[in-house]
Image (cartoon, rainbow, N blue to C red; front, side, top):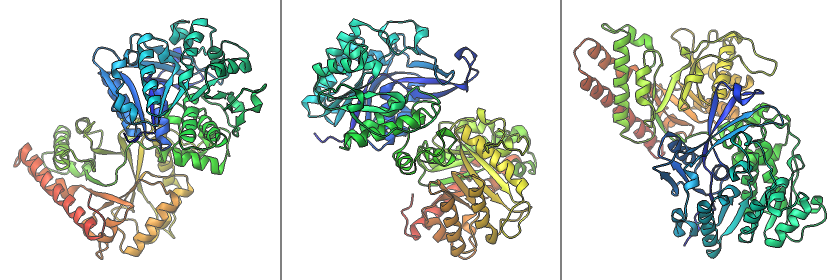
Length: 635
């Protein structure tokens, strides 16, 4: 059978609820960030980010958290064929916090959880045969049922010629050796655990652990002695993690000191959060090992991934993409607190976005003022009509990706509720947000603006930058403060950001100033995920605009064109076909006629939806024809 998977990981899968406040007790956390967790789950996602074809075998509950894990893994590119939904058990949860640089409290909620119900019957021999490597973690050797599943997978892997790896991942309380409040403890000596681990060591080609984890596997608190005991049971390459000192690999006999092992360079960085760092390290190591790099290179990848992991909040969200890892290794450490390195953080954000949008057609009905001038309009009526707008967008989309809406959260709250989880791209105006002051801190971080903490992560923040004065391509500095503030707040809340440029009053931004304004964004540290622009006057102006955007950010999502059907010299076809342009935005031209008729009582709900779907659908077909005419494949 063709081995179309590089890696299968097996074992724990949980939802991590990370305390959002730093430096306090877990008892005092006021809010939590939600991420996927569990070592095998982290490693599956971490290696997928690095370009490996990864899969996970585990169980999750038949509820919201189980679906969250599955959906997040799929967004990361992980094969979830053997992520089994358990109809009887709940998905495991973990509560975690960052107390200080040495204490990271955590509580495992794993009583009869779904992943611990994994059994031999869940291991599909044909699925295992597809993999070049199977990796398990120590926790699933702690219970007879999960141990039998892991052993079956390992034996099948070895029979098919695949490599095998063990991350010892020793958590004493998951072996029943300490109480629920002792989740932070990483080592308790126990002969039973040592015996169990040693009974499996012969099944592995690679064994990875901290010094304490090798102590439990080797039955000695002398690290060299413990490594030699493990060597006596297994011919695997042994990789011992040494914290800030990096790691050492031993392919043969264990020497007298750890310094005699193969090592990779370390990275002098500030430790912010050690939780999940080992899984980041393992992801980098597996990337090197499974792409047949030498051990020094593999350890360099591993050390770098571990350094990036300990510098950020969360486990999986902290891990680098392959582009990011190469960028980091090429450029090196510039700021010890890596999370404060704006260039590195942008590469991290831009190369780990949640979903790809190769094409996008957006129906905009967010501007309340457009509706308030219609006879018969009122808050309740406008809200109802906006729900009909969502129905029209969904009818045109017909379950296909690449369609979206712009909606507000004031009059359009119920419309946003209706769009949630529908597959539509959802943009939302930042004009809903209170903007406090114009000062920035010494580090350049703008004062937060309230309200974004209530926005779902699928929403995109749309900021209309109205240029108050245009002269020689420069803008008034006072108009930049809200832009910087909302952009920074969007990033903190993990929301994508779109910049829409407007000129003074009803004017458009002049073509002469457009390029300079986009360049100014880069100067003030604003790198939008998206731009919304009126079509420039000529193809040459568009070429200059395109170059300015890419100079500011080569990772930009793209541009949406407003009013694309009214290009002034026929350049719309050229613009529509350019790869940087992902689609268009259309508003009143779609809903205007239907809104007047519906508000006046001359059109019922079905008629309004049908009218808007017809107009929007025609615009979408027109856009596709333009892309086809330009030589691009219609989306």
